[in-house]
Image 1 (cartoon, rainbow, N blue to C red):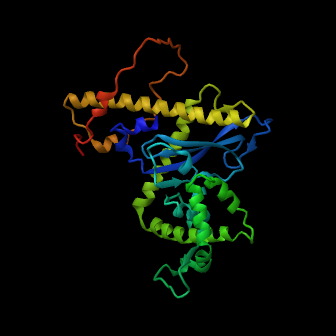
Image 2: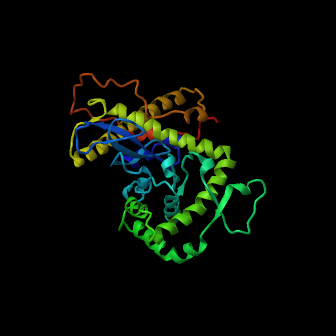
Image 3: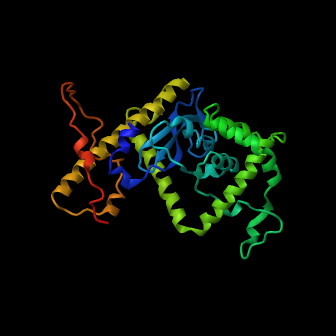
Length: 331
């Protein structure tokens, strides 16, 4: 379904599919359920649905986790679980993506991590060596990178990255193990040192580029929009996971994710049909205006109506709508 969605010209106006944003939202559960946990930030009892949304608005990946789990650990799991043709190499995330270990593993896997930054003034920048000094911003650099540890542990870090690439281990699994903060866990400290280098470069770009901050904010807003949309899709139980078993809860997240994608695809088709009719009528269309559209429309749908199914009805062929010429639009 994701591959079919990616063939439509209109969704290319919204994004190239090379970047995506990850975010989680809480799903309520009965407090008496043994699977439920209290979430400090969201309030109430439940679990977390974690989603990866492409810049073209299609959801590529979803996972159900507990409220106590660190959401950032799941950011890179899509590398192995997303088998569609849409393969982003840039990932935006909320502030839980600030972890230096995540930055280090993402770098070795060829993924550019660009999260939102919270309390940036409290984050330490690491200078390459004690001899390096910088005009005007030297006070931001408080410590030095441990290059020797990176050189020593680089073969082990590469083995971890290759194991992730080969599907032998999930990124979330290794990140949870690395987060034990054991003094004997040298590979964790090596990933942390590498992540400090990558994050320092990113932070310097982040504070010096208004365009980058706008880009990250716009990307993460798409995740927020999907969280609201997927909640709207799950109208029958008011967002309540009534099942107490973890397998059924995972099914709820996956199936709801699928229905949301199908509705977004349906909206994309309807929008393309309408735009093609406008284009054939000779009316000009602004490409910049189309870029502000979204397939997360909710107004036309009556979720509580009576529907008569016609199994003999054949769907309309979609091939002629795939010829919609985006290049013909005026900028």
